[in-house]
Image 1: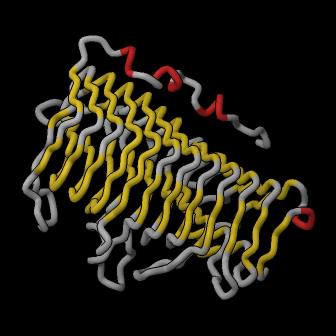
Image 2: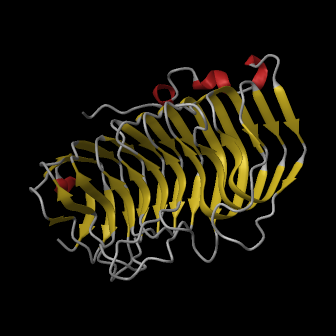
Length: 341
């Protein structure tokens, strides 16, 4: 359980081969174009699409404005898809996979990189079905400054999506603003779901969300060098995995039910290894470092070489469910852990 994972292991499966578009033959090239919809100041799906993904498509240095659900839409299965160097502003969601007239709209063998997107209402991307063998890197997504729609998510995976790596990807400000105060407020930077597998997050950042910075249900998730700041629950974890050199800073509650936390664990959680976690919270911030809320079996958390400075917070808090098994390596007194209890 104490085995470190390396960058090479994280890109195993051939993602490095996607570094250039040379593998695409007879490709559709869309380069240097501007696409404008008719969204204006509206909300919801209004605004239209720019185009639909097809096999061997290469999109480069384009700009997208005022579109609805899908500046790029995956409506049928598509392979060998590259999108790079683009900018987007004012849309419901930039890239969406929703089948039309077929049972599947999986995006496979894809690269999305060097992009910025702002004033998003629902999110940057949603990949579903059997999306696989993909790389998303150097992408920055910002929600609308006034807040997003219900269940807004910067980067969302669902169904059986697998073998996908996020590298240096940022999600900022995905906040719900229309929930009543007695409800749980959603709004996440990154999500993946049960059924997803081989999902990797390298040097990713999530800030200022009303729920999870990273809300992850996939099995065996791998995270390295990620940063979560000022989300209600910086890391919201439901399954199993390893988090290496990840940072959590000052969780912030903005409204709704449920309290704040650095790392929170839920449902059928198994074993998580937290290797060299770095936790920082100002005096007076009482967000638990490890919160167990409604777990259905005893979770195992292995803390290795922790660096935790949260003087007003408990290290462990249990809100329903069985007590967890917290293992320290080396022993707790030999690690840098400063908490209220």
